[in-house]
Image 1 (tube, rainbow, N blue to C red):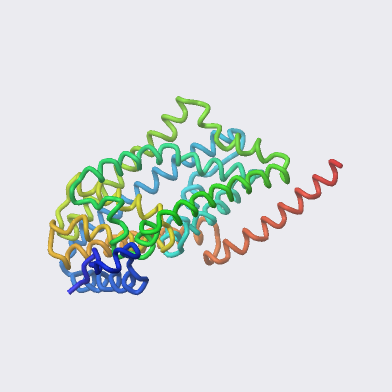
Image 2: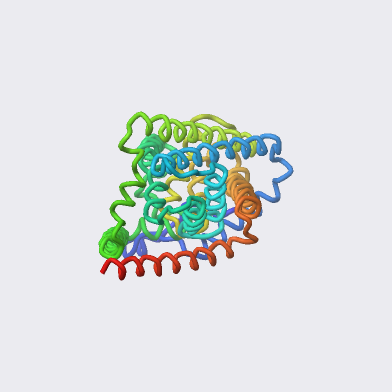
Amino acid sequence: MLRPMLLADSPALSQMVPPLASVADTVRAFTDAASAFFASLARVRLSDLGLALAVFGVYLLLRARATFNALRSALPDRPIAFRRVWGAYVAAYGLNGVVPAGGGSVVQLVLTRASIAGASYPMVTAALCVVLVFDSVACAAFLIYAFTQDVFPRPADFASLNSFDISFFAGHFGLTLFVITAGTVAALTLYAWASAHYARFGDDLRQGIAILRDRRRYLLGMALPQAAAYVSRIGAYWLMLDAFRIGGSLRGAVLVLAVQVIAAMVPFTPGGAGVVQALLVVVFAGAASEDTVAAFSVGQQIAVVAFTLALGFAAIVLIFRYRSFRAVLRDSRATRAADKAQEALRGSTAL
């Protein structure tokens, strides 16, 4: 029998501290659900699962296209190969499934920058971040809808979920606020330092978000493919719900997407593992048996991670000609060192 996802607490303890799941409980719940998934693998509709992954691949393609359009707007006079932008995106997505704290995003930045002659890291970073404008609006809408549904836990209930990271921060609001404030201060400090040390930093950032200054180009080149990408992702989750015999529906697929949004806000485990599983088991508790729901909560994540990791590895080998993700990071460190040396040389020449 799987452990319940909402933990019971004694009255004495609840008066002293918020109910928190331990790391061991989180790992145990995840492994129990993974065991349920592999035990019920024969019941999974593999045709629906395969179709779901194909539709998820369309989601990745559309997201990469939006990023490509942002880069092309920033550097209209430079040749940019879409396949390399796509390869960098899927490599990052796959790596984020196994590396915590969004570490794959570094790989995307490095590979994208290396694919555009003369592009700077600040410019490419700004262009990659343009997708967050539409994402913020869309994700807010998904969360608002999810919180209006009775089956979806309220933020006040997150502290009692069997996932250590989300329960910890939900149970320690003061610490959470401090972390957010410290992160904001660190970002502003980094911006000030970079502005003082790199003459073109501000210009590069403005160049990176050039597409935002052209309304028509932004709507057609970014908002439209991003909206289509979310439709594809919802379709993929709908098919996964069918594949695991929970029953696909638009409502269910949007709730799965809302869970993924929350997990992305707490990126302390690879792919939000633990957070996704804990929330999905609660959300779909009445839709199927406990073992079926637990198998879906982990199974859909395993399927997506395996699919995107395979795509990402194929991209770095076949498109970028690297033998491993580690080789990408090693090359990026050498490139950054060369860039710093070149910047220092330009600064001394200007003096």
